[in-house]
Length: 186
Image (spheres, rainbow, N blue to C red):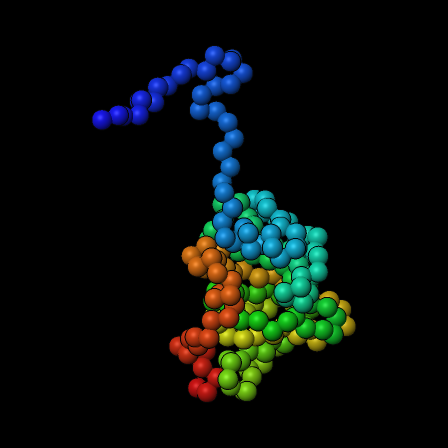
């Protein structure tokens, strides 16, 4: 019976190369690929002094402009982004299978929340300093009530969900309604 020869360690003879040294890069996660596919900047650092100073680009999916914030040490656990809602405008309606919380950095407006198949919308107001959360997988739309742009900082569990399912169609189009989290009829 033939056996493959045993692997043998060979000491590097080139003094510039040492065994065990080198640059080992982490492969992209599904969330990394998702962020890159959105066409907006991704800010990666240990912290952010002022989110207002981060560069933003038009964000087709959201309908405003934004940038992702990936704080070092939170990769795969917590996602952040800044989104600018145009003056007297609104973001595109969306729903998703991850948790999302907002801090209003600048501006004033409303958020509409509803479930598919039910025409009843719940609307609440927000202003600078407000904190609010959107129920998981509930459709929602953020509306700016002023002529100046509004700026919101969002924190999400999107990295966990994206990395677990790696299927954006399922994450953004799942029909399941979490009535224990949001039931418009109660």
